Image (tube, rainbow, N blue to C red; front, side, top):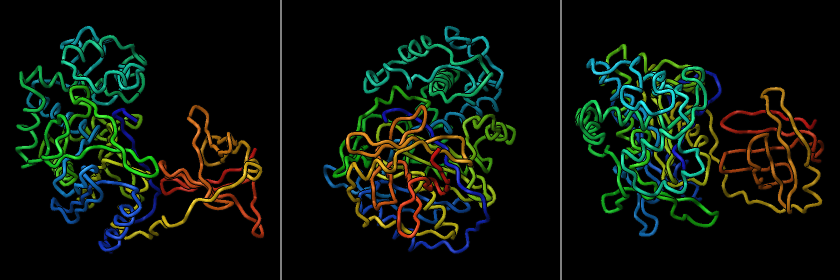
Length: 445
């Protein structure tokens, strides 16, 4: 996917503690991912403001077999929005802006600009359509755009809803916020990032990105075609701007999050406003649970890069994962990392298990519409051209891979479907869906 995006991962509720962090087990898990070409990334865990675990797997530059290390810079995508929000709130603390300031003061030609406030832009409640969702986006994303050209693109967008009547993730709003930062300070976003955050926190590898320079230990992004890593698209960084143009390392991302959430960058009132959640959106910060704990952070993606980050206030623990290639669900990787860190039971996946082939005559036995009493979705399983596919309403069909007569997987999303058995015979009427640490029973309608 060649769009800047954000995902929030949700994990079951129970009790956890940081006691029993098995670093050797985490090493083993990450080395297993690397050995089976499941992912290429760097990660870091910070405790009380100090890094206590750093690890890199895979290559920053596949073509030259250049290994990634703790100083490798990755495009962090929408985690950039937390930096943008932080700088906007610094302007608010300085009395140069307010949450009630109207967008019309700076960009009056944007649809509903007289009704859209800074607060709405920050919390994805402006209604401005997300420009990365337009059909034209993939045609220009690799081409440099001037500020005026990006403004014109956003001014031409329709509104998804009346301002503040709903929430819808919008990169457009954060591009606008980045431009407003520049307008108020009469300076570039890149310079303001350095002055307001990177220099204050001694972040030497956190900057506004440009063309990937592997000689400066910057990672290129890749996709996996089941046999090898292949180069992904390269978005020109003039496009994402304040919505996703920052490059950094996981250690520096955790340092930033830890500093922000402990009050070192904005006032207590501003931090409280950043953390407020409305329909799942904060003003730059998302909240997600891990068992009985809650973290504030953000996720991101641009080209083949994917990233996740979070800060657990009760433990003063921050973690970040920045990837330049995935052949496995990032959500499952994050769950594994946090489970091992917090001493939760976790079995390292067996990637040695091989896929099997089933005839079309056998596959049609699994067909049907299935529903769950726990979640309000249906899944239609159907055979198409010798492949078994699973599809929910409004979603694209996913090609499942059989690993046994009762187990099917879609590894890119970490989906495992296990059909029931009775005396070693497959029960085609029911299966258990496993994803993101959760399990749901589905029954054929």
